Length: 400
Image 1: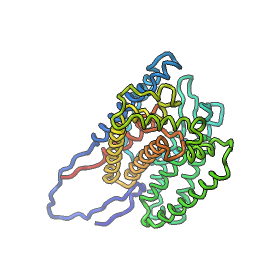
Image 2: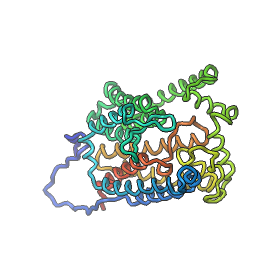
Image 3: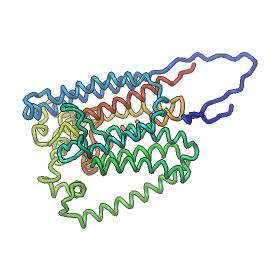
Image 4: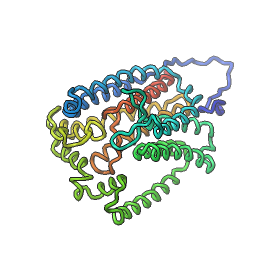
């Protein structure tokens, strides 16, 4: 057997010599990852239940309807589920044809945020106003766009992808996306996820892991030095990003100001104990934690369902990641494998960052908990990613 590069650059095509003698033909069937589908349905259902519990009080005060946030999220989720099923029937190789268009469209949408259609919410300009009732957050699209584009680029470059020239090109595209997210959309957390996706994909295809160990050591040293500098020289700064870092370094000293949200979140986690107060019986959501149905929703889960509930949720995320890993390992070509890997990295990094922020292991970043937190654009593109993963799973051939 010899292997040749697929002319489309999407993987490796196996070419076998034909033998004259009879051979046993193995039966085979197409695979569909119902396990992944069941886990996704569980997560979105659990998310809607927790969202109602977390948002009912504030929705009643703000809109006179305790179902306001729940109804909006449920409608978008239902539409996203239909979209996921539709996308799951698309051959994943089709995305490679439009990789450049998808990448450039993502950049254009983030640039448009600074234009007339851009909307500022809670002091951050991150949304595009499509209609009076519809807003989208382009930075959410950037994650999927980068996964599709870098996977395509790596396949096109082949072995040159991990040469010095190839590395510079790939990281330049990723850095351009990250800087656009950070500067134009003022979204540091998403910029970190974008670079994590790029580094993760590059780690997967690179044959020499020593470079990454060296990079981690250097990066860790720079981070430690930076935190030391900020903690000693930036006290009292008016910059809100620096303020978040200072709050993270000394939450007790700013418990009534910058660290109020995270302090209340920690109180909620502590008061829930192992088994929790019971679903709907939490108290910190009643105004103590601002915007609790967004990035701090894990605190509500910990208070009402306890550490046990949090562990069950993390177990479900672990099972989701396992299914994505299975799809990546058994994908029919390199492109499909990289797509599934990129989705794996995105979900893993976002879950880790959200849990770390809520427990004050990282500074506040505004990163939501996938499938659980309120956010129409987030659930739309998460379900799109799940559709892509299911589409790849449909191309897996099981042999007997």
